[in-house]
Image 1 (cartoon, rainbow, N blue to C red):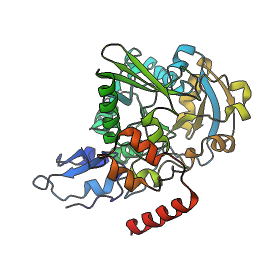
Image 2 (image 1 turned 120 degrees about the vertical axis):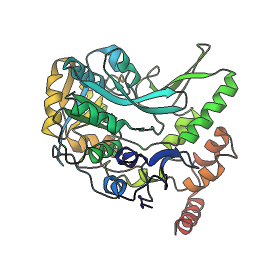
Image 3 (image 1 turned 135 degrees about the vertical axis):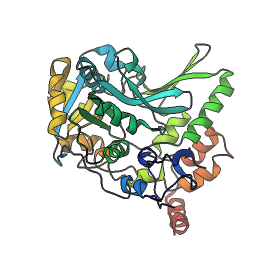
Amino acid sequence: MPKLSAICSSCGACANACPRGAITMHLDMEGFYRPSIDSDICSKCGTCERVCPWLNDVVNPNNSSRTPKTVAAFAKNEEVRLASSSGGIFTVLAEQIFDEGGVVVGVAQLSPTHFGHSVVDNKVDLAKLRSSKYVQADAGLIYKQVRSLLRDGRKVLFSGTPCQVAALYAVLGENHFENLTTVDIVCHGTPSVKVWQKYVDEIQSTANDNLVKSFFRDKQFGWRKFSLKNIFASDNISSLDLDQDKFMQVFLHNCALNKSCANCHYGKLPRIADVTLGDYWNVADVHPEMDDDKGTSVVLLNTAHGEGLFAKIAGQIKQCDSSLEKAVAGNPCIVRSSKEHFRRYEFFADLDKLTMDELVKKYCVRLPLYKILLLKIKKKLLDR
């Protein structure tokens, strides 16, 4: 049997590259997608090992820069901006691709508890891909689909986490497609599907209603104090800000992140994508003229290819030149991984035993220093 990386990012490159279709992705005990290999089909060709972005270093074929041009920007269209997580730049880039006859690939909420990559070819359906989804996405066979689109001569804008962009390049191999532009997000980490499912079960039980759609970055109370808004079948809406919502607390305290997120190979410089998008959280301090609490994006133009696409949307955005140092000061995930919660193992051990409220009270609080030290010693012993 092939030996895939023990620290799996769940990117799905192996499943997309397997020439015999012997690999499928399934949720593990913690709720993360992991490859399952059918030994009756597997020919032991080694393709999965060769494309694994955690076993091999993947680079952007357009030559990413370690000193990318850095910009603070937001869409002039306020409706687009308010419906977006940050400044709405992804939407403007996507619409430019549509105008050129291309398609856009990004993550959509396919059902209340299932998130995955989808291909969109029109501006109406683009709303499905807009805004952040703080749940691990099922890549499915999207990289094979993108490869087919590129071979057919279509322009493609692919958006995903850094590991997903790396997976796409790994599956494409040495083929260089000029029609492909990639966008990666400044990623805090990918939370467990199982944790999200637990959260959904609880809010549905409380509301006695079925969840239909979630908006993880609703700006009802502003960009900085964003809320997780849930819409139910009855059209009832619940909305709690990031400091009150149980799922957001678990996410932002790093309790439920994938193990690989603590040492991401691609969430650093040089960035893997042509363009990197994220929140310019400290924009009020460094570019106050760009801040009105409606959302401002930090944009890293990592390749000449990415710069070329960005130049085409200049008339539809407000922007100002910035610096990498200023952007990193407000959003350090641009260059380094989120730290693993030192009680992550305990959190997942308790996941089936405690409610979301109990998990938050146990793991999202500040402990006395001596307890933190004891728990860190215990974690080191368990990791051996």
